[in-house]
Amino acid sequence: MTTKLALAGLATLLVTGCTLSDESSIGSSESDVIQPEVGVMLASHCDIDDPDTELEHYVKSAFLKNDGIPLPDWIRPPLSDLAYQLSYDTVRSQYDQIGATHYRKNAMLQVNAATKALRARGINGKAYLGCDFTNPSIPAALDAMRKDGVRKIVMFNKGAQYSLATGGEHMQDAAEYLKHHPDWKPEVLMVKEFSSDQRFRKLLGDVIERDVKASFPGANSKDVCILVASHGLPLRMVEEGDPATHQMQEVVTVLKERFASYDLRHGYLNDDFFPGAEWTTPKANDVAWELRKESCPNVFMDGRLSFTTHHRATLYDLDVEARAVLEEPDLQPNGEPHPLYQAPRIVFGQNFDAEPGLANLYAELTTEALGGELGDNVVAVTATAPIPIR
Image 1 (cartoon, rainbow, N blue to C red):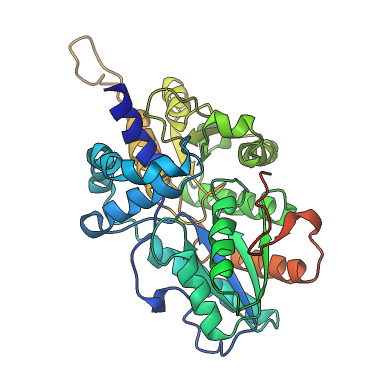
Image 2: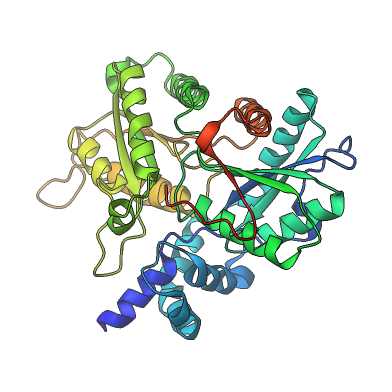
């Protein structure tokens, strides 16, 4: 039984896939982009909209490819069917509760905004969406770039931090594609992270402040709690040198300084329901319990620290599970809600999606990467180059 439970959890570990789509969904639809010289890939694990047709592909792809799963590659294929069967009920239940994520539609808003920002800076470029665990896949995005005649590629993880389980996987997919297409020789650069960039830190603080004030007009900042949630990782990866959670914590420190008059707290969104693995703490759910015990009257939940488009991790773990904790009423001995109980006002913040500030940052970083201004934060991706751990 323990082995089965472990496989079920492993199959859903950090699962974030993207909807199946045709080729037109990969690149920007901006009509003024003709034969772009520069291709900007916004890469992610992504997410799905239709569990009936996409869930099996999504879970199996995650199980086979995700570096967060502590199994050697050779043993994964024969276990993928069993892993899918054992994880189906849990993951399907989550999608049934949140409904369609609209991940692809919202990610394409970001792709189109990035293309506009590139053009505004005079860059003959076009943005593309590439996903690790389902279509539009990173190889499909590279196919589209090759057909468009792209000669220079700048890759970003859609989230701000670098992890071997995200940016590392994107580079692995790109390197494999280049290996199988030796006739195409674009310059491929990966911007590892922009979490440490002061422009991102200011942008994140600006949008949180804007949305908090709009959500609770007139509220005293002492009566507003901000729950910032971000992607968690197995401690094994952190101990091996994965830098993502350290990068997140640095930004949390900056946010706490900026929002010093608010009660701002941070928690991780962990797929941690399989035995034998330790994950980053505190979990967002545990932080929600702390806020609940203190009867915070206004709670703003935000996922933009490490997610730039909402998907299952934010839509379920934060807006369903953490919200349920926050909304748990005070009970009388008879089990009925206490007559003096007042439910908190809870707002689940929007994500970046087409936010102009993020699109402009992508464009600025693209210019700086191509100009050699980002130092060791840029990695040249080739068919043979090693993938950095940090």
